[in-house]
Length: 580
Image 1 (tube, rainbow, N blue to C red):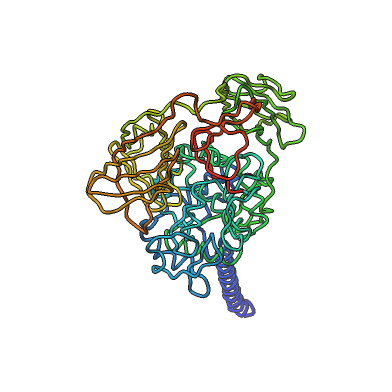
Image 2: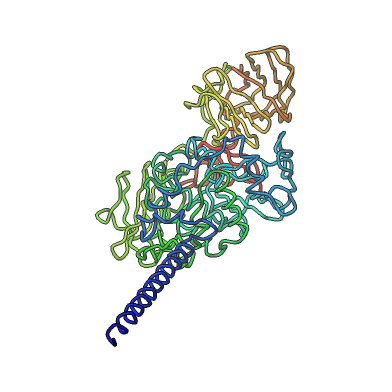
């Protein structure tokens, strides 16, 4: 009887125990699901990027750069003309006007003030390639990548031209309120003219260049025009030259990511489908090039870098004086910003190494030479620096005696292969025939054109004809089509009749420009009439000065000068304006 009572109680107990176990399993399952759900919530990148960067997880240094490349490459860029509409999303100020990256003195309306032409700051805005499009031959998708194609004042954009970005030493031009500057380079590792953006966007610019060096690391080797190789180099890693990398790391630290930059990056994602990881992860450059490059990257548990601590590198040697043409000889000095580094060089154009000549002090060149040099310290070698010094023994005279002649104005005269528009070519075209020098300069214009049959003078362009001896007394331009348009001359008088434009005067050099807001004038040839005095040359030579070691500088009359003052001169085949 007792046994029969125990059996039902035991069965009841088992049923209750089974229910408790099932309930516990259910709770454990729900807890596991909750933890998994929370884990998925946590496993998100910054700025609503979700798992966009997940495939870069755990990568370091060069491998991290390549992983990011595979994430952000091939953006779905808008058309070049479509950028103006896209700017309404990416570059609108709180007051509704266009955000101007190069000027703080403009109030441009979207899709209104981007038309017409400019002659000064404040006239109109246009599209600025922070990496000049001439460097990558205007190729897509870089040409329309809105990460680096920015709205800027047209005139300031033109003054920037295709010069590299860097800190300026001696300012030759500044926009209003000294917001942007142009001048000689202050940054170690580069010599030449550079453009300095304002301090408040230097970090933005640095992170744009980090992006470009990553997004297009498979194309950098093909960017061979202009100064591209001196900025990006020719390899996927590091993708930027040492001097550029050190400068941008510093800029990025001094001007860190802010809310405006984050908002623009989110808008870029909306416009073309990719993001700039250097904005999403402040200091990410440290993980790729800096002191954290041996530390694994975590997309959802990111520990920020310092945003500017670059791995110590050996600075490139710097030549003094600059490469160029010099009289008789030149004394060359090599220096390196890295304290304690040894410099090795060659004088025959061969690549330099530790087996080359050890630099121990200034040396003298008496014949044309290409010098290549590297700096070495603690087993590390700098990038190679190179400079060509042309030595001439010609001190007097004014060049070839000019004669009456007819000159075809085409790419043959200028010794160039350009054929058509030259909007993104900034160097002056120079040619000489029968003692007459012709210079075709872009000037402040935005367009230029040259092919095998003509050149075109646009607003802002400059055409200069000069002789080294005597004077020019008459010019007769032939135009391929009849026009009433006329060039403006710096001296003398100009008239036009159908397809012939005539100039009369008496000068050793004359400048022509097209004083209009649009259009152009086509010129196919020019007949030149000169007057050269007989007997001893009237050229003012400089026999009383010792010109050895001095740079070769010509004025527009073809005379060599030792100490130029204010005016226009020809230095190493380029037109230089000395304003002070």
